Structures are given as structure tokens and as C-alpha cells.
Length: 248
Image (cartoon, rainbow, N blue to C red; front, top):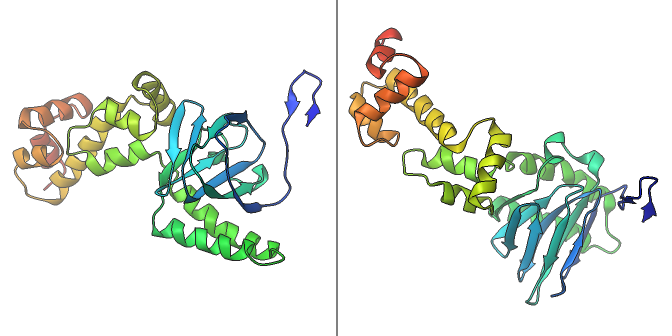
């Protein structure tokens, strides 16, 4: 590493994709680098502290670490991970300004893992084939980058959603999570949930003849009056008036 004029340290740079199997010790290591990493489990567990996140990467989890993100990691069990180092210039801008993403290792990512392993197990490694895989990998990186808690809201808007539950999905504490959520969406979690419920109620009012009470229950309210207050707050009219206005 090179020392910069301001006393900082120039982080290691890479010019090409690097994929390899790696293992980690029980000694905590803290560093950052100018390239991103996609961490795919093979076996064992890896503890990672990145920004405000503290998480365990195991056989059901993968993690994307953006460039220039200081992180601490260690493992207390035998382990092996498939690591893809990605040069910063190959990344979409949305991947450059966060503390990373974790999500479940679904069948799609298991297939990607298999393809990468197949290439790196060739001797010598077919670097061209690995590059040709990257657009496919990048597509799913972008697709899966919606934060887990926001996806959860859209999938469970009709249920009671606690701030603690949302924070735990991102591996944040509650106080940090609210600030993080505001930066991500421009709204506080409670406001975002209300707007998701409001938009779903609008769809039901426009496209069904369901009674308003039933619509209120379907979008997560126990009483019709709660939905009415929501419409009055954001639309200035009642759900019934909204339906009449739109001509159902």
C-alpha cells in the first residue's frame, strides 16, 4: 500500500475479476479495499461487522460488500467461502454508497455459485469465461439489492410490523435503523408503511367492489376508521369519496 499526501493510505486496487476459495481464522481482521466483494458460503460461518451491521454469513446467507467499506471479520469454526473480488469500475453506482447487502442463498444464487466454481476449478482458470459470467451476476446483484426490510414491508404490509423486526432484518439497532431508513427512502418507517397501505387500498378501491371495511382489514387495519383517517391525511377525502371520484 502507498501512503498518500494527506497521510491516508491508498487502498489496494484490482484491474480484473478475481474468484477463489478462501478460509478465515478466528483472529479478527479489520480493513477496507477499493474493490467490492461477493461472499458466497461453501461451508462454515463467518462473522462480519461492516458499518452498523453485524451479521453471520452461513450456509443460507450471502453478502455483498461495497468498495471502501471498513469491515471486521473472523470465524470460530472450520470454513470455506467462494469470494468474488469485483473492481469498482465494473459496479453500478447504486452499489458504491452503502454498507452492503445480505440475503438468502436461494436456488438462483446456488446456480451462480456453481458456475463460478466450475470456472475457477479449471486449470488454468478461464478468465474470459469468468468475465462473461459477470453481466449475469451483476443483473442479480442489482435485482436483490432492495434492502431486506423494505421488501418485508411490501410483503407484509397487512400485518403488524414492528420497528425492531425491521431493524433486525438489516442487522441494525433500532435507533440507527430509523436514520438509515430515512436516508434510503426519504421517509421514516411508519410513514413508508402507511403509504404502502394507502397505495394498496387505492388499488382495491379502484379494481374491486369490496366493502371498505374489508379493504381496511386487507391492508392491515382493524377498523375502517383507521383507513378513513389515512385517506383524509394524504388525500383530503374519504375512501368512499375516492372510489366515487374515480368512477367505480
